[in-house]
Length: 259
Image (cartoon, rainbow, N blue to C red; front, top):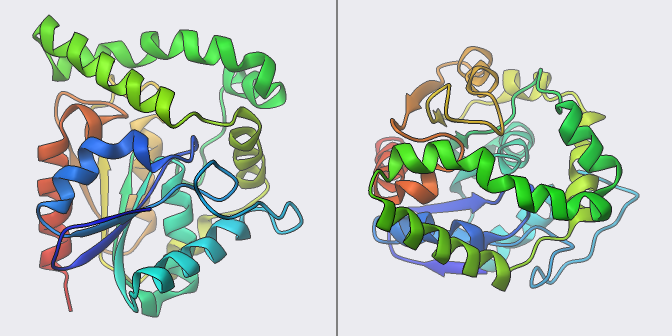
């Protein structure tokens, strides 16, 4: 578990790959402004929790209960990154007394459906893993170029992230299960139940090739009072390509909405 920094707390929930280590640049930047806690989703290496297939998505809510208890947090801001946004949303809807602010970062909103390519990956996760890894640079390179125009910085960024990914490997079958469980659920009613101040963060429309910005932007209409902010020159991974800007935006929102 990642637990660093002082001051107002924020718990950051990772994306479908399940590893907090992939978010390290943003977590380090946030920890200079808030007490920042993150963790790996249950079932992944280092999470300390196994998956109970019988309860599906509920695994992640129960895990988040335990994370808050372990960290000694009665209340906290929640930041859900991509798939983690769905966990944060459901938690804020079902445990409103524990959530002081909600940040949804490039997260699929109600109405999102996987592309045909994504469905093929989910149906055959281990067989598809080499293709998924091989095509990732093509999906992310346009926003990396936009955020890091200097080729030296792009090479350094790619090398550092490759090291993080290699040190904290994803489990393809777990990723597939996560997508399958959410497809069976309706998160629309959760949006209506959220009463925490909510910030929706995206990159630019043409640069997010993972979750369409128009889908994430739906949260701003579905959650009462939600605010939408764009991190310019980024797409799906603005928390990695521009971590200082990301941390400033998130921490300012957390401090502005502290009780």
